[in-house]
Amino acid sequence: MNRRELLGAGAVLAATAAAGPVLAAGDIDRFSVVVRGKGPDVILIPGLASSRAVWAPTAKALEDRYRVHLVQVAGFAGDPAGANADGAVAAGVAEGLAAYIQAKGLKAPAVIGHSLGGAIGLMLAARHPGLVGRLMVVDMFPNLAMAYFGPGASRDAVAKGAADFRQRIETAPPDQYLARQNQTAATMVLTQSARQAVVDDSLASDRKVVGRAMEELLTTDLAPELPRITAPTIVVWAWNKASFAPAEAFAGWYGAAYAPLKGVKLVRIDEAAHFVMIDQPARFQAEVEAFLNG
Image (cartoon, rainbow, N blue to C red; front, side, top):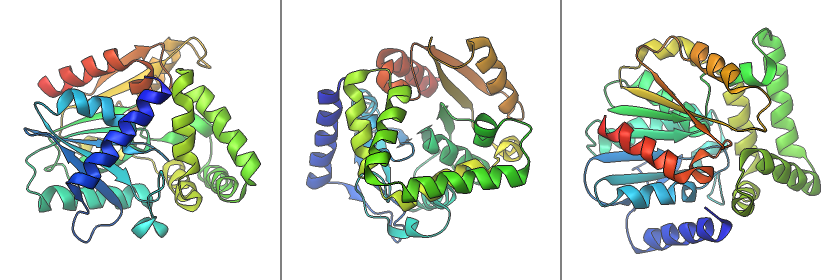
């Protein structure tokens, strides 16, 4: 997917929102939802500082057979912070989605979450196991601190490192912040033409919400909660030649991280970075189809 296609997808979603069903989930204002299509329910959750537009091709491929709920987290990609101005972001959104599923009468929806959205999906499936029919986590560990600080980091070291991340996100001068977003996008999106849209979403996000969400991810270990998940779960992870370790090492890390989750399926997609759905859309969509039909 190139930048024009990604921006076009965002325009389509914006038009859909203007014409019809943008749902505020009652009194829940931690996220908004655009609903498209008819059929079994599929909830798509984007990652940190991302818009729902990253899911547009996935939604387009599904909406003739499924009712797709495209989530956007409040405070990200130009949306007001809402209730995410305070408190835990990921955990708050997970609880809000549980309420949304019940309020809308959704029957065991499939949940697909990328990055932060994957962590939200894990929280939702572990803390409300009766509400999720199946779960796909895209390029996310249940304990992100291990990837950032290593398995031997103490709780105090993780807390300090996470607080430092938050402070840098919140207080970096605009030029430094822009440079950092460009640098990050270059490592997270192999498709060069799609990077600017990812950067634009990040720059349009509320930095305080982004900072607190990042700190929350780094200080939350979901591994002890994995055994509570009863929904069939698949974890899709990316690898490419520029990755900092061999694919076999990543496979070992993911296997160990998700070992507490019985029956989990791990799927590697090559020649992709963090935004797997952008770098390898056909392969990713094939995994989504297999996941939904499983």
